[in-house]
Image (cartoon, rainbow over the protein chains, first blue to last red):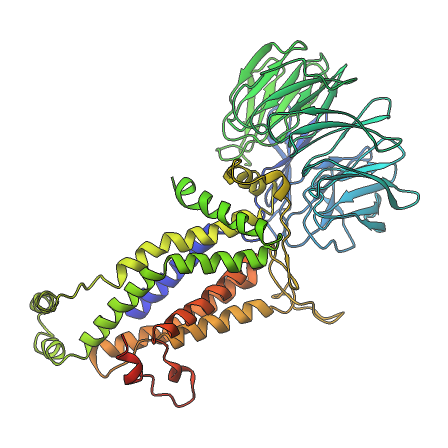
Amino acid sequence: MKRLILISLVLLAAILLSACSAGTSAATWPGLAADSKLAYLANGTYVYAVRLSDGTKAWQYPDKAGTQLFYANPLLTTDGQVLVGSAGRDYELTSLDTATGQQKWTAPFVATDRWVAAPLVVGDTVYAANNDGTLYVLKLATGEKVWSLHISQELWGAPVTDGKLVFVTSLDHFLYAVDPVAQKVIWKVDLGGSAPDSPAVSSDGKTLYIGSFAKKVIAVDIATGSVRWTADTKDWVWGAPVLGGDSLFAADISGNIYSLGVPNGKDAWPNLQPDGPITGSPLVLADGSMVVATESGSLYAFDTSGVKMWDITPGGKIYTSPVAAGDSTAGLIMVAPLNTDFLLAAVSRDGKLVWKFTGK
Amino acid sequence: MWDQFILNPFTNVLLFIYNIIGRNFGVAIILFTILIRAITWPLNAQQLKGAKVMQELQKDKEWLDIQKKYAKDREKLASEQMRIYKERGINPFASCLPTLIQFPIIIGLYQSITRALAATPLGLLQLAGSIYPSFLNAALLIPLNSKFLWMDLGRPEGLPFPAGFSLPFLPYGFPTLALIVAATTYLQTKLTLPPSGTGGANDQSAAMNSMMSIYMPLLLGYFALNFASGLAVYFVTSNVLGIVQYASMGRVNWRNVLPGGDKTLPAKTGSRK
């Protein structure tokens, strides 16, 4: 009897300690992407494809949960692939068929750490930034490694490109410009704090805009790597800034929203703070309006002058950037909250809840 | 409540130590564990004192007599035990209460290490919310330097196997630190085993202690094998400090780990306190 009690106590202690620890299971907020027909949700042990028409499941990968853990934003390629990295112990980057969810390839090379960032595809080449601080360059068709470049510490932001250079941010406080031809870093900029998300590239390909934990948004000249202007924010900027017309939209983890002038970084919307921290990027819609998701589980839409158009609270805690899906004007806005009884919600462009997806 | 009074203060102190010692998270964990052990020293001492009184009572003639006499009358036995406690001014919970008070502190220590390691975006956001802005500049601290000796403290430890060799149940390589955790846990459990007597409750107690000395090293070794190695560093430090503390109070029973040891506390050592 005493033996049984003791074993029970030890097991209870094991459960308690396991619950206390994040371990290496790397739980975090989900990744999200969408095209004209499906939304793709990377949520823990599964990647789901959900029909925009009715919120039903089109497929899930894998059929049974394995060692993979998916949290990075899936990347959709023009040739019908979904690329998604795993934050599990396998360190795999996987290609799935968008239509069926069947695996096309799993990276035939071994990264040494987890995938937090979505990859970037340019032509037939994949640029994938890993938590081990390395930028891996792969063939899109097969996933084979072409070359790699160890840059620095954790790379959490998806690489972006101006068509010539590849830009990578790191938690080490720097923004790096990599020349894929020379396969080396050609300049880097000290941001003063970690940058966990990507920079935005101006439409003319001359400027990068990046937010960081230094409570700043910085405009960087792509040609020289010099800082063009700096705009102060009230707290850490987590999500990537987004360009919309002549404005650069950004938000901080105290929930402040900024509409910065592209030429000079001057804030046109002072003191706009709806509710709760904002970690995702703002979503700029075709009509110029802007949508943000807050940790409080709400979506807020603002017109071009910063006047609130609508708000809705689907629930849970929303950390993932909202994503536009379907038709560019009449489509849906997808949100993927945590800590609630559904995994994904679709909201119409005028702020009405359309459906919820629970994973079944 | 828990975060405000335990986890956040612990996390800030841990990061403060990390900052002032030159950003070495491994050393910060060791120093923080020493600090917490020092703060809880009086509680540990009280617990050991209470345990010693209870152990001595187990050998007392009157105590043994009532165990035999009322072996089949549990109600009477309980009332007789209470009488002896009262007459001798013994608090039977004197060794349990300090342990209960320490438990949240140990959990808080454990959680603060996990939180500070912040391996994911959500973990980093939680860490950001835990840091007192007026106390520490989190933007300058992040990312933490999680490299210590040959380890990445945010990941399970393992020395790489020779090229071409792998074991599916050891995905991180040869688990040096997990073995050290298991060994030090075993050593601590064995060294601090109370003296075993003969017959009755003492035999049961010895059996339980013996099982603890097997299960605890396995349990903590398993954690060290699968969780961030920063936690394993804490386990090893805590075990070593536990042995040092027991030794300084004359409560270490070296014979328990020596071949042919009689598993009883030396009379001289046992009577020191």
